[in-house]
Structure formats: structure tokens, C-alpha cells
Image (cartoon, rainbow, N blue to C red; front, side, top):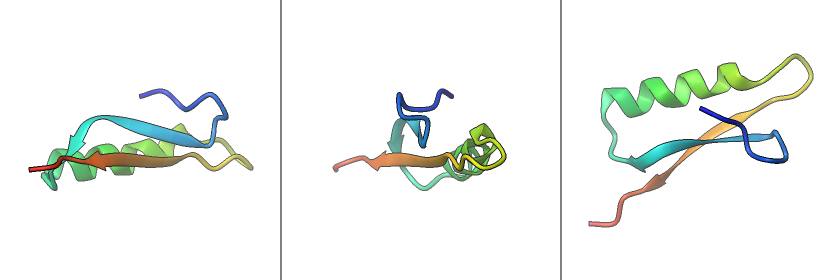
Length: 48
């Protein structure tokens, strides 16, 4: 997972479906931050 160009966001691959894997990826996305520089993970919703 890569941080955005501003370094403040971590877009997750694919759409959000609410599975355990999605939740794990969101949790892991916070690990992309650094001390003093929070990185917030996000996922887009899949439209049915």
C-alpha cells in the first residue's frame, strides 16, 4: 500500500465490501504513517 502524493492518505486497492480482509487492510493502512505524520487509510464503496 502506498501513501497519496500528499502523504496523508492511504487508498486501499479495490472496493470496500466489509469483509475481514477489508478491515485488516484498513488497520494496516494506519501503519503507513510516521511519527508526527498521520496517514489515514480509506476504501471506496462498491456500488451494487
